[in-house]
Length: 209
Length: 310
Image (cartoon, rainbow over all chains, first blue to last red; front, side, top):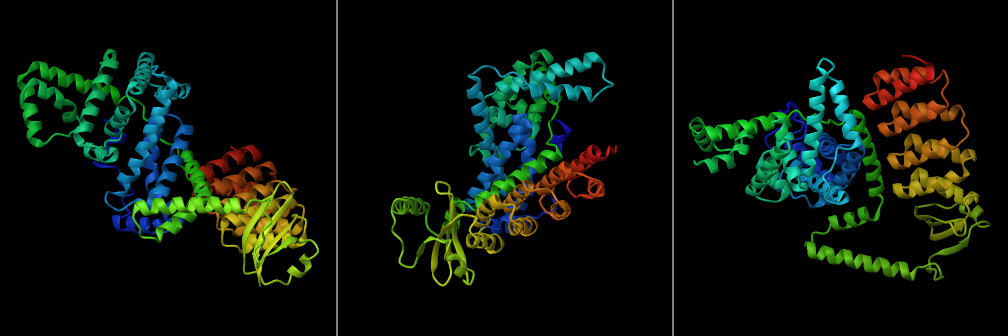
C-alpha cells in the first residue's frame, strides 16, 4: 500500500497524538456549551485528515473547500447530539463520509450514468506527477500517466458507496469495523462492498495487470 | 477451506483483515493449489497497480483557506437564529420529540409575531417612544444607555431603526446622517455584546466613511473587535476610504498582530495596492517569521512584486 496509507491507524485516524482523549473530551464539552475557540481547536485537530480524504475523493481544491465547509458546519450544528458513545473522530468521519457520498451521488447524477472521464484538473495533476520524476524514461512516464488515468476512470465507475469504502480501506487504511461504524452498517456488509469494488477494479485495470 | 472460500477471502487477506486461523488456512491452501496461488498473485499485482495512483495531498494554502472560510461561516452561524435556538434548547433537558414540538412552537410563534408586527401595523408598545429622532436627538446625548436591542436599516425609506434600552425603551428612526443615530451606532460597535449588532451597526456607518468619527470607529473595530466577521467588515469599509498614513499604520498592525491568517492576508492585499518603501521591511520580516505558511508565502510573493527582490 502507498506510504501515506501505511502510516494511518488501524481505526479512524486519530487526532494529533499529543492531544489526549481526556483533553479532547473537555474541548468537546466546552464546544457543546457554545465555546467557539474550543470548537475551532477541535476542527484543527481533525481537519487535515478530513481534507486529505476529501481531496483524494473529489480531486479538486474547489470542491474540497466546499465539502470541508459543509462537513464541519454539520459537525458544528450536530455537536449537541454527540453523546460520547463512539470516538469523536469516528463521529466526525461519519459526517464527512455522508457529505462525500452526497457529493459523489450528485456528480454521478449529473453525468447521467456516463462513465466519468478524468477532468482537466486530473489530467494536469497526472502530468505534473509525471514531470516530477524527470529521470524516468519517456515510455515509463507515458505508461504511468495512462495507468493513473485508468485508475481514476475505474474508481469513477464504482457506485458512490463502493468508491467510499474502497478509498477508506485501500488509500486511507481504515479497518473494516471502523468503516462499518461510519456507514452505520455491519462489517459483513462492508466486506461485500469491498469485494465488489475490488472485482470491478480488477476488470477495469486488466490491461495493466 | 475450499477454493471458493479462499477466493472470497483473498482481498481481506491482503488487507490483513483475517483472523490468524483463517490466514493460516488460506496460506496452507495456496501452497497446494496453483489456481488459487495464481488468483492471489493477480490480486497482489492489482494492489501494486492501484498503489501507483498518485496521491493528492492538500496544500498548506488549502488548509489555511479552508480554516479561514470556516471561521467566517462559524461567525455568521454564531449570530444566526440557529445559535439562539441551540442555546435555548441546550439548557432544556427534554426528549427529542418534545424538542421538535418546541421548535415547531417557536416557528409558529415567530411567524405569528412577524405577522402581527408587519410594517403596516402601527401598534406601538406602551413603553416605547417612536418617531423621527432628528430634533429630539440632542436630548439623547444625555441618555444612560443600558443596551441596544435592534439595529435595522430600512432601505425603502433610507432610514435606520434602533431599539434602545435607556430609562425607557426607545424606538428610534432616522438617517445615518443624524448625529444622534450615528452616536448610537458608534456606541453599538464599541460596546455591544452581540457581534451581529456590532457588524450591522458598522455596515450602516460604512455609508458615512468620510466622517472622521466613523473612520476612527472603523479603525477601532479592526484593531479591537474579537469577532472575525466584524473585523473583516471593518477592513472592507476601510478599503473604500481615501488612503492615508493612519490607515497604512492600522493595516500594518493588523498584518503583524491579528490572530486570523485570513485577516493578515487581506491586509497584505490592501497594503500591496498602496505599497511603498515603508511596507517592504514588514513584508520581508513576515515572509520569514509569520507563523502561518500561507501568510509567509503571500508576503514573499508581494515583496517580489513590490520591490523586485528574488
